[in-house]
Image (cartoon, rainbow, N blue to C red):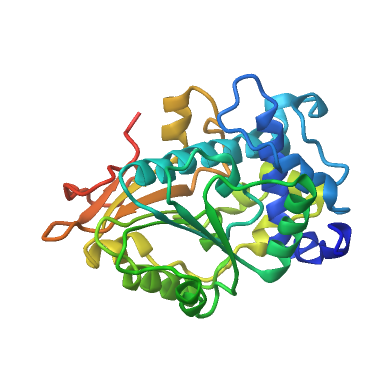
Length: 328
């Protein structure tokens, strides 16, 4: 029988290690009385891997609280992102979407912890190593998913569509797609292929949410405490992991394909929920954007990009479900 410690190679280094970082942030958030999201499985992943066994999983283990650049500021960012994307997926599901595809699913347990409508299928796509570690911990906990869960090993830098299709995915049905914390690490060509594949496999009324950085950060931002503290304390150099190529404008590409695209900043949702990170000088989170897109309904003719960031011309959205997250 495999043990979690024997399967930690895929989450102990590189981008896989960031899955443990986000799991620790979700664990800490879970134990807050005002938690934006709760994930009872998160701390078990953190404790199961030698690389993260000593990391905090409760607020009391973070002496500086929200002032801590890593487990406070960055941790609250991940918690807010989790809540916003949870809401987006559940909104799609409750409007009738029954296929959910999590690209780069990591260690999040949405198939287990969210209240899915009947007959939902949740496809988790990630590396074989990450999925094996995740499954071992879940088996140890005897966890039971709240939806039909299909874990699929694939390299998202390459062609992954056949893996999805062979697992029962139906491109004729609407899909809720999520690429949480994924595109930051992909080469530009892989991002273009991923967006094109999503478009090709999406029926009318499908939705998509993902995260980007919309500009090259200055040297001052790159030396901010969020980056330097994360590298020094837990050995994750986020800047080295981010792909350094010029980024494609995937939001504009989706709009050109007929999708309605809405661009939000994390701070939109900090204001909306009353919790989460706030802007600061030389802000490592200032360039982060959360993109919400909806494929056109049958017969819909309009598309466009709406944004809370400067530099993108807004235009009216198409009238297709589900609506993007409301402005604060």
